[in-house]
Amino acid sequence: MIYGKTPIKFNTNKKYRHLLSNDFELDLRQRFKQESRFKEFVSLTKEGILFISMGYAWDGVSAPLIDIDSCRNLRASIVHDALYQLMRNDQEFETRENKKIADRIFRELCIQDGVKKSTAWIYWAAVSFLGKPGTQPGGRFPNGQSPCKK
Image (cartoon, rainbow, N blue to C red; front, side, top):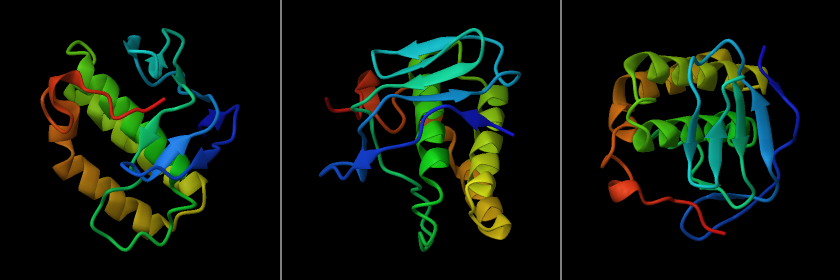
């Protein structure tokens, strides 16, 4: 079980579907062996606490499926996007193992938050097999540009 201390509050955003309206924290202990940080928006401590700051923008689940679970997969999508962003911008953090961990966390959070298991597995398969460019420098957001707006 993955525990979060804060609920997600968000607004809509013109460029991205969601804009975080509060700071968000999630306990991912026992998952990652190193810390990482991307500017002021996303950090993962040595203890395994993921912090995402107010103002972080993300696009939600971007799989080409009918997104019937958009309210139930918000936590999974913000955590997954933030972890991929850490991988894109920290070459020491961008490893095959960390990608696998991020993808598993995504699936677990979807299921915990009420997404049907079959849908969560389809989402997981999509990010597992098609998500690698999103973890690499110059992938989805070239030159380390942040998709975040304050």
